Image 1 (cartoon, rainbow, N blue to C red):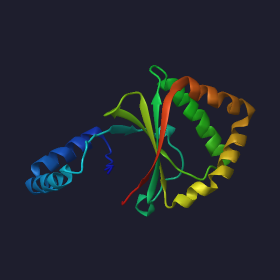
Image 2 (cartoon, helix red, strand yellow):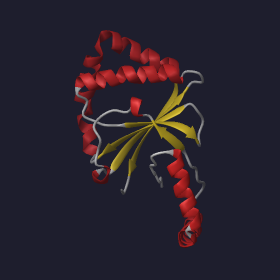
Image 3 (cartoon, helix red, strand yellow):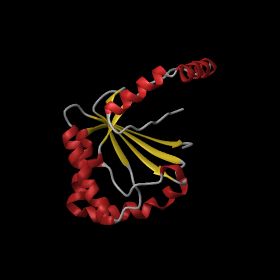
Image 4 (cartoon, rainbow, N blue to C red):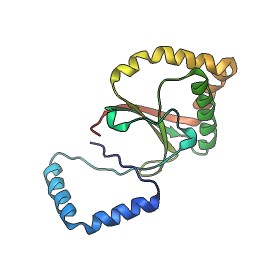
Length: 172
């Protein structure tokens, strides 16, 4: 299970944590649930990411209507995060020019896993949205132009160690 919580700032996150720490009834309930889950858990992990508006794309979504996330985790070679970000910005131009139909949010991991790492969340109302992506990808490639199509694979080969793709089903 993944629990994704958003905050407007680190100060807000800290304030909410302090508020939760002072709520004894909540702490008691969390302890009770944790004991029940304990026999099924093999581990836990907290990951802290910072939203990168400059690397994100598309119109805002009504997250309450979404039921899936396509999550891509990019593990970047040491010292290559700026070059990777420039590659993403090149891709963003292609997405905008092609009228790419999806929105996604880019997060830079600041704690909880090796760095540099970026996580990209693409919310979807239905998995059927993935069925139409072949045409969108073709339009994106055309929008990149010949130079972009040649440089994108090199940028990512030079900067990315690994990419992990997951589909998460969620209950908002």
